[in-house]
Figure 1 (cartoon, rainbow, N blue to C red):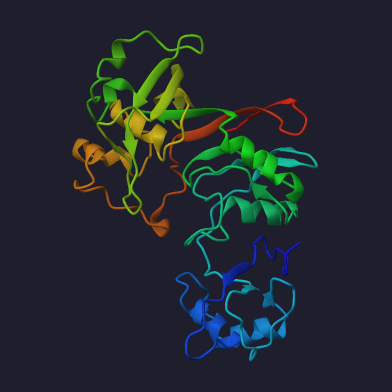
Figure 2 (cartoon, rainbow, N blue to C red):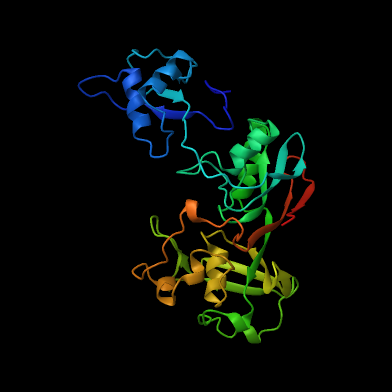
Length: 338
């Protein structure tokens, strides 16, 4: 256990004290320097709140030693404290537990919540919600789902077995199946991109005879969308099923997708390249062909959290997760209820 426990589902923040300048850092000044620079902090997280942390023994070194406000900090040491994040727009719905045992918890992550705390999404995240809801502060995700994607998410319940499951995902051992909902071909808002322009004339895909779609993709930090490039394929997606269904009062095309690689937005880009962006995709539904190939072309204005319509989730579901358990070798299968 670290110097401070998980509190309200959140880990403490751990920060390195930088090399000394002409004047060494005083603990209270250094902590206020850090907190005042945070973009998404509570309005009442002021200097008085900094002193309250010291009084409560909630500013500690890695050794567990509590710091006093006027202590001089040693460069190269780490201090630990709790953030007080700004209030967030509540995302409706609870975390649905699909499976729970002594080692793992498998949940159905709702749309619109991030997997892990990051940026402006701190408390409205799957990890924090699950920790609070289940009373298991040691929960830790073994992989990640995008904020707008719903479906199967696996977490470990004990720190000592965390590495085995994380390594399993890093080695891409689990078999993942996604469902994506798109408009019908006759409602396609775009023409398909070569060399897959003829996909509508292909025989229907099956698990035994899937379509193997290969793309070259690139995602640059700071740019909203993933683009298609002229390089050799680095993104492989199998389409193992295609059917029509009634969903939310309309007929849609349901794609069964099995990614063999893990590029950012891979499935969203694949379906946009076929002319059928995923329903309610706030980025690729309106992305032009030019923007699909070039970062110089304009992209749609991002939808801010305050403006999101929780009644219209993006039609991408992490539907199935299959893997041999890294501890027992037992085959495990989990299926989303979405």
